[in-house]
Amino acid sequence: MRRILKQITGLTWRAISGPGAWKGILLYLVVLSLQFVGVWISVRFIAWSKDFYDAIENMQADVALAQIGVFAGLTAVSAGTYLVMRWLRQQLLMHWRHRLTDRALDAWMENGAYWHLRPGLSPDAIDNPDQRVADDCRKFIDHLLEETLDLISSSVALVSYCVILWSLSSFALEFTFMGRDISIPHYMFWLAFIYVGISSVATHLLGKPLKSIVFAQERREADFRHALIQLRETATEVAQSRGEAAERRRLDGRFSGIQENWHQLLRRQFIMGLFTRPYYQTIMRVPTFFALPAYFAGAVTLGGMMQLGSAFGRVTQTLSWFIFSYRKLAEFVAVTERLDGLFKAVESPAPMPNAPCDIKRLIPNTGYIAWRDLQLCTPDGRDLCPVPDTRIEKGERIWLSGASGQGKTTLLSAISGLWPYGTGHIEAPSEEFLFLPQTPQVFAEGMAAAACYPGDPADIDPSELRAILTRVGLGHRLSGLEKTGTEGTEGLSIGERQRLALARILILRPKWVLLDEATSALDAEAEAALLGIIRAELPDTTLICVAHHAPTALYPYRTINIGTPEPLTERLTA
Ligand SMILES: Nc1ncnc2c1ncn2[C@@H]1O[C@H](COP(=O)(O)OP(=O)(O)OP(=O)(O)O)[C@@H](O)[C@H]1O
Image (cartoon, rainbow, N blue to C red):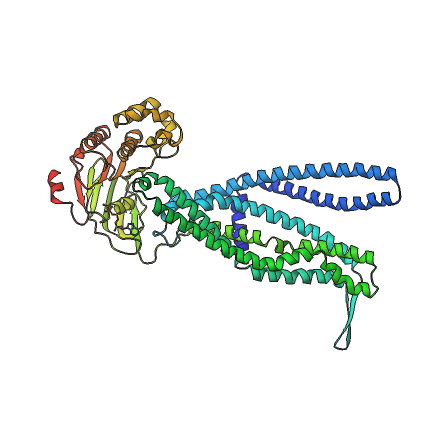
């Protein structure tokens, strides 16, 4: 309980603190005040019904008419208060959600957490981070507002109902137990608390597993959504390989996970319902039964007993907030734990237990890359092929060669400061590296954004962009620049994607480029032409090129072999 309260306050602090925090807090106070106005109006309505019916009973037409005017006024205030309160509450929801989402995105993006905290790379790997950032931030604020506002206004209402119940239940319960006369004054008052106390404990015991079931449900829903997104992203591969049946199996598997957990959820809700439903239905009647001993003892009249029953009912109903909100509270706890898990994992990510994490990084004064005594390993602690000590000067061209799986891509990750597993020393400049993978992504933001990534397309002159795209052989796709979304990049072949990625070098003009089989889908002639352009235009740029054949267009280049050298024929061609 203390842990979850700490998590809730921690997340709340993230959402409400920071510059301009006063705005959200002020909004919250206004919403709370309006909620109190709502409680006051409902109390006024109770008094109004007495005045109105008394006027009718006493045949006072003018008073009754005046009360109709009071009714209209109260209704107008009530409706106005409710609408303004709801509108402000939605504003506050977005205000705090924005702040919390900002913090979650900062945490997820800073220091490459989105890269490090992936399954297989970290013991704290985060499942479905998209769900945590997109859904859980919203749900957390939504629950926070609903539960705290409810709790505060219920507590205030409870005090006033308790005062009424205390004054109405002045009589005592008298009985004989084991030969002794016992008298419990205000017993109806104490009974209300005992009744709700016992019921709350019963609800908690029955509903305890609900939190983890709700947690699992959200996770399985997210897994199913993720599988559908994967299908969209790999549509061509699936369609070409007639993978529909396999995809259906995968999707069905994920969906049956949802169903299985759903049944557990239903079962648990049913078990809870066996208690909470009768409780809900009897809460307004049971007070009368409890008051019967006093009635039969002549301590209270029938009218008094009915009045007492309704006061008791109000107290128990307000006290039962915990019981009635149990399912929502379970969701709140599940959302809190997921979101807190994200922040905790990012703040103190643990390395894999079986792999050394001791690569020392230095930033040299002059521009060069060097490594010595470098032994990289996989996250499960397997040593990769030893890498010979090397120093790469600015403007050099390097062919990083080695058979498949020897650790070339891993070395590139280590150079750019991502790969943590291994031992040794790496010196690399602080300037940004441009990394081009084998299958570059094209983003929903369109052709220009893909060509300038990770730069901003607004920073390049459109005519220059067109000229560069034409030079890399994408002149026939220039119309894509005018189209928005994925329409402009739809159908780009892998080779064309690689051309688009190579255009980034000409646009961004970086000092250090890491090419990981970035030309593998181009024919030899196109590869030679493109690398030739890059070499001629950017003579000072260092190119470190991972490839399974010699990048002859980069000649003169230096070869660094990792593990088994490439086949002899490749070396001869070089
Ligand atoms: N997250 C990981 N978990 C476990 N093993 C990994 C992980 N990442 C890489 N490896 C392993 O590390 C080894 C080196 O991988 P890497 O991608 O660096 O090889 P490569 O030389 O670039 O191969 P290729 O030429 O086929 O691209 C491989 O055996 C790979 O399976």
